[in-house]
Length: 478
Image (cartoon, rainbow, N blue to C red; front, side, top):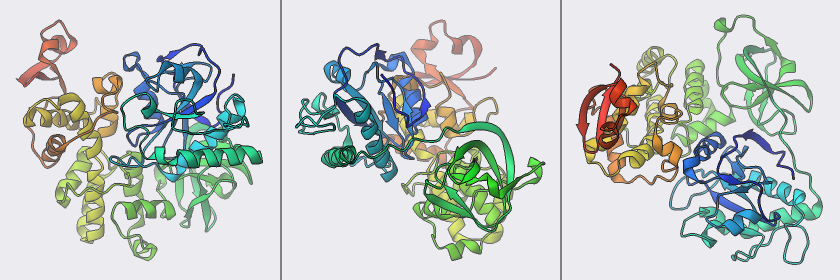
């Protein structure tokens, strides 16, 4: 039994039965209930305590991860009989409740993945016995979903598209369409390449068979983090910024990385990002601005995973927003940026930074819900304080997202409650209060329950006890 060649990331979960006890005859589609990457899905399924997994995950960016091989039974659908017959797929959402939509990239990849699974598993059949999927909203169909077995909103907006999924998959199987597999990229020691042509296309993958997602027109220098073979170039290079791939036939490798400007190109990709952040999407407008500044800004927003398609005006003060981004270590050179924005007095740039700061809020709201939703207002704010205190401490990872997902730090990440979090007004208020300056933490960077602290635990033995509040005890290094 084989696995999908579409997979670009693998982290096998311990939550599985090996081998499955029935032949594969179904596909079960779920949604993640969040906009998280395939790597994060793997992190969620990694602890044995979660007791959940899936065969595959599809990110909003269209990439595919694998967490349980097809020969084994994943624990996905709250129904052993279904999971033993099904290849299960978790699809990331591009936005939240109540609709839980998915991106076009994720949906198209889902179709491609279902076609591949059907081709390799001939027992997945339509009602008439031909290869493919049929959906009748019962467990007897070859396309099933979570609501058949459990009270849940899963698979969200995807459910209304199940008939369309069947139609597209079956049409491709009938026409014997080939499944396009991703090129195997080879990670390389990072280096800077200077573009030596006036216009160089950026593509979503290595090869001219992938769509153009942007252009480079400034003969600038860009950091390459991976290389791959591909159509119409001797070699393709992946940009550090995540913008895509460029042909290495039109660049010259730079010798001194420190002397080069590493930037994110002004392109259709970051223009779309700026539009989604509530900023002017006029190319003429952006051409009049400081390109290096905008490049650095968009690079940091995109790379820090703070950028998404939602706009939330919870932070409205420019000075507060700038401090949030500095505290979250989103910017490489905040002093330069501060001077530049003050010099420009540009309301568009002000609003860009304000909206970027709001991207910090979602992971904070989720971790507060998971860690402290039963606490009073201060108890919930203290969780936010601890995380922000860690972003200012060089002994912890850089940025809010990486602090929250550091291995073995926050129990809700390992037990899955973070992924299931549904923050309400109390958590949103706690986050915004702290982001706007409220701090009663005395510099705490750790906390645990008082009950745990009263046993012989690491916090009590190793750290300095600061104070107790609610059910939690707060600490910092001695």
